[in-house]
Length: 118
View 1: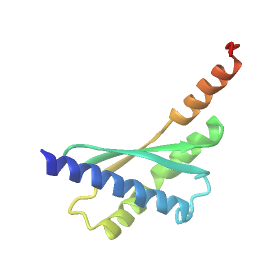
View 2 (view 1 turned 135 degrees about the vertical axis):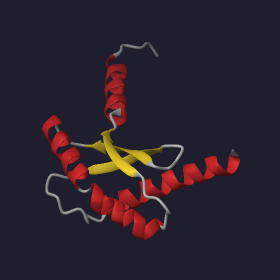
View 3 (view 1 turned 90 degrees about the horizontal axis):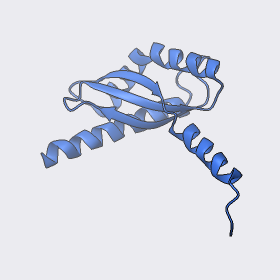
């Protein structure tokens, strides 16, 4: 179990880094893709599927457009990963909006409004 789990985690991290680099380097030319950060990659145990969580710093409409743009670029992203990671099988990719940063900002604002005695 140890080796396959370590490989699983390593492959997920590599995919996260490659997609992050691809987005940061502006190699995706789709104008719908705004300011995006890859926050996490969840890879299935068989390495066939992955969910790429992205934080998108835009309003709801732009988030939707950005996810559409990323989804349209899946083929290009898979080719990029195949070229750079030399995996036998490139997982199918699904993008999901990661709300954890927005949620923690929301919680911080609530905490800051509390009148806590010192």
